[in-house]
Amino acid sequence: MSKQIWLHLWYSGLLILCISRVASAIALVGDAICNAISKSSDRAERTTDKMTTIIEQSACKLTMASQQIEYQRIRFQRFLKYEISGRLGEMQGKFQFLKAVNLGSLSVKSIREAFQDMDIKVNDAAKKILDNMQISAEEKRVALMSATVAELGFTEGTTYRNIANKISQLGFDMCPAEIGPLLRLEHVKQPRGEILYITTNLEDSVDELLMTVACANDKTLSLRAVQVGFFEHSDIVVFVQR
Image (tube, rainbow, N blue to C red; front, top):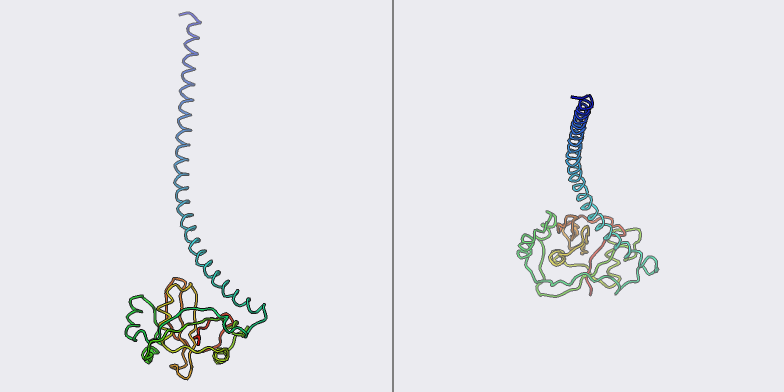
């Protein structure tokens, strides 16, 4: 063969070798990129799952917090409405209507069965009141009103006896014992976090206990009886329209 042919073959072989090595290098780079993408995808998927869980938990907590804030906002607005207007203690006929219930409509046994069917929680003190409760002999429909302690004129809070005296002075009545259980059965769409204190004549109460109708943040409805103590300005009391 001539010298030119040998040179041509040598260059061709060298070119083939270079192309082969470049192809191998490209293949190695491709594999590395695929592995990196795969690992990144796995990490991204795990990160996404973790972030999704965190977001869901945060959303749940935010929802509960916003509901509690909204409830407190409403209570504060009710307080400011009369604080700013300067008409505290002059609000007969201006209180909020809550519910109408029928006295004498249910026996104690029927009330207990209804609590069980509705999964309403009743503490031992409230059970004690139920044991001694006298049901009205005649059925009578009464209107229940509600007001914060501030709306009654006590912007710094006060004792229960002062609250009871004020309600009487404004022309309203205390609640008979059966109001608490009846209101609990009627007030099923109670806002989360709300606690209603059912007024009563302490002379007729068991161990000076007041019933409360409450809804916990997890939507659990309850009827509880608590010792009479100091009431904050934002506490809500329930009484009867004459």
